[in-house]
Amino acid sequence: MMEFQPIKVATGSSDEEGRLVLLDGRLIAVIVRLDDEAHGAARGQWSLEAGFNGVDSVKPPLFANLQSAERWIEMQIV
Image (cartoon, rainbow, N blue to C red; front, side):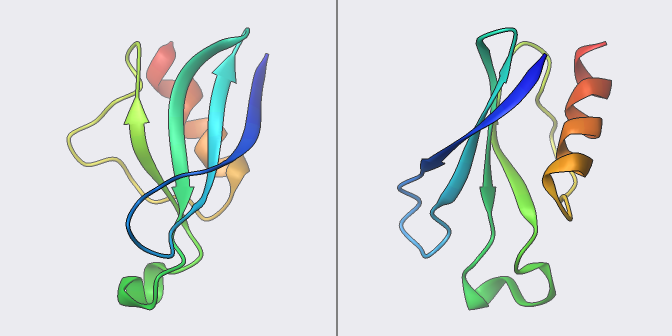
């Protein structure tokens, strides 16, 4: 079972709202909501900051919401 636990992430910008992504109690990813104005049209979307055990990519997509992040992460761990 995948769960998203809220956490603040020290990114050095206003992008602080994060989620620890756990699968069966194990950390598999950290995602952060893009909030800084510098992100332009991407503002409000979620970005993969760190991935573990196959949840990593050279250029992961941005996610419109947590559900789309969950679907992408599930595809990475299959």
